[in-house]
Length: 228
Length: 74
Image (cartoon, rainbow over all chains, first blue to last red; front, side):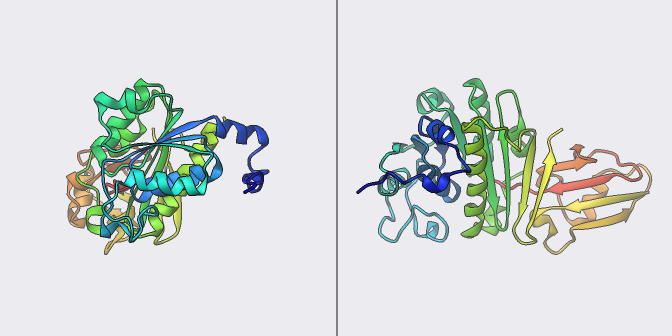
């Protein structure tokens, strides 16, 4: 099949040079659940050259309501492997590497080797804070997103920032344990996360450094807060 | 003294989005959240006039308080 026009509709939002930069980039997606699945899907479609998908979980029936990589046929399969399979059919030009395991600080340098940017799609507040610390040590930009019910938060943390720590460093378990995660919330927050990721990869200024976007899909309010 | 209280995400459920509250002079954030049945440990982010605060922070006339629950799912 001739796939030459694959990126035609990325223009002129992305220039040929931007597209080339994406093709030479590597993004690690930490967590391949609701957020991570959609993030991986979009980064593959837009043409990021290499993805590293890290998740130590297998699909369960309760994932079907929101996790794009989950189907009735792959319940029980490793999430990262299911993503790799799907993405190989979406964009075979993308190299998808999978790590079937949880993100660990002592394995971080190995897991994130040759990565240019990290997407935080985790569901643990403590691991988010640890991931930010690791990214800063490795001089990697981090795009983070979180969800609960109708709500989400999104931001960018560059080396030296402590944005994730400021947002997720305190408070007990997230309200997602009571409010769940319906299909639309991870899809919206993942799209926003990919938007910021693409900007950083092509060298544009991120709109959300030292700030976070508070997303309320119930009232359809998107409010930006400065991290001072 | 008059303080503006803004609630976000699930804190709005059964409460309000924004409300002006009359509080005694020298009241702290705790005196705002207690009547709302929000425990200090439920506060993931607390901003007083856009800057980091916590349950013990003392409030002043005209302050704007923004309170956020922990949102951590993925």
